Length: 78
Ligand SMILES: [Zn+2]
Image (cartoon, rainbow, N blue to C red; front, side, top):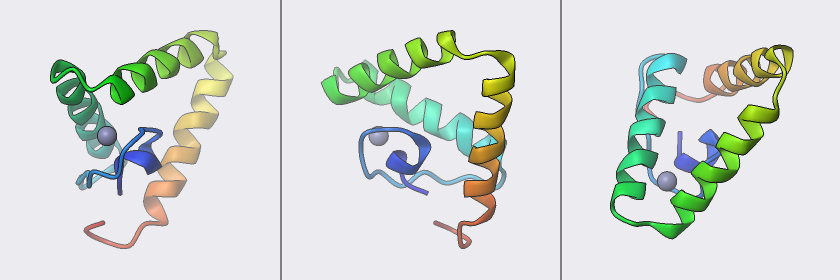
């Protein structure tokens, strides 16, 4: 999957065996980009953090389920 499919702003490829690993790797990627001073990722991280803070536990569960479905629908090694 690419950064964009993981709610990020770019098209970097992110690899992971499981949805959890994918999530972890996308976070690592975002943190790396932010550490490099990438403004687009800084803004995206900030927006996502705000969005998550506003989410109810139920909405967070739905978000995770949607992500897992997206991941399951991906062909391998994408
Ligand atoms: Zn990215």
